Length: 372
Image (cartoon, rainbow, N blue to C red; front, side, top):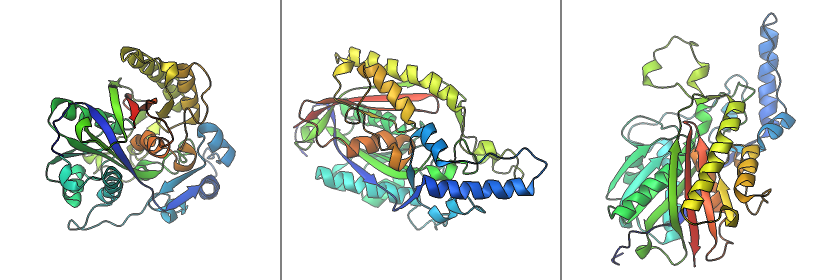
C-alpha cells in the first residue's frame, strides 16, 4: 500500500454478518396473538387490543421474516423482547462481536490485513453503551492501529459513515476506512405494539472505503455523496441515561421505537426522491440511467414510489432489489445488505445509488460506478 494517493474514494469491499436464527411472520403472529388473548382476558373492562395477522404485516411492509439474535425470548408471550446475557468487561461485547464478523469478511474480500486500515467508524442506530466507543472496541478486536469513533444518524448511519470515510480519503487523512454497522434493532422494538411489532431485524454490515490508488482491481468508484437532515418527531426513541431511574412502567412505550408511519411515508418519500434527482443532476447523471438502486429496506411501498419517481417508471426487482422480505428493517444496514448481495453481476461502467432514509429525518445518498 505504497502507491501515491489520489484522493478519490472508492468502495473496495463489503461484509455481512447474518444471525443464524430467523422469525417468520407466522411465528411472530402466533406469539403476538397469544399475548393479545391473555391481555384482553385479564382486562375485560379495557379497550381490547387488536390481533395481528400475516396478511396485515405483509400488506403494511412487505416483510415476511427477520433475523434476530434472541429468537426464543422474543417469541415467548411472557417476555417478548430479546434476552442477551450480559458479558463481563473482559469479554467482547455482542455488538462489537457481530461488527467484527462483518468487518473481517470485508477485509478478506478486499485482500486487506488489519494493519492496512487507518480508521474504524461504528455507524449504527442504537449503541450498546455510551463509552468506551463501540468503534474502538471493534478496532482493538481487529488489531487495527489507528482511530475509531461512533456515529448515530439512525437509519442513515451507514451512508453518513460512508461520506465521512470518503471525506477522510479526499482530504488525505486516511487511506483505508472501515464503516461498520452492527444493528441489534430487536432490542429497541416494542414487540407488543401491533403497528410495529413486525418491523425490525438484527444484522451487521461493513463497508471498506479506500483511496483508488490502493483499491483492488474490482471496486466501486464513489462519484458523489449527499447528506440531508430535517428535524421530525415522527420517528423517535426516548431511551437514555437521563430516564433510567423512571418508576417501573412510567413512560415505557416511548422508551422504545415509536413512529407515525403514515406521516413518515407522506413526508419522506417526496423529500428523498427529490434529493436523489437533484444530486444526480448535480453530478451530471441522468437519474433514469441509474442501473440499480440499493434503497433503505424499511417499507416496500416507500421504495416502490421513490424508485418510480427517480427512474420514471415502475422499477423491476433487478433495478431496485429487495432484501426487506427476509431481513426485515435492519436500520442503517438495509441498503448495505442490498448492495452487498446484489452488485456482483453488474458490468464495468454501470452506475448505481446506495440510499438511506429514516429518523431525524435523515437521508444519505452514495452514487457509485463499477470499475472492472
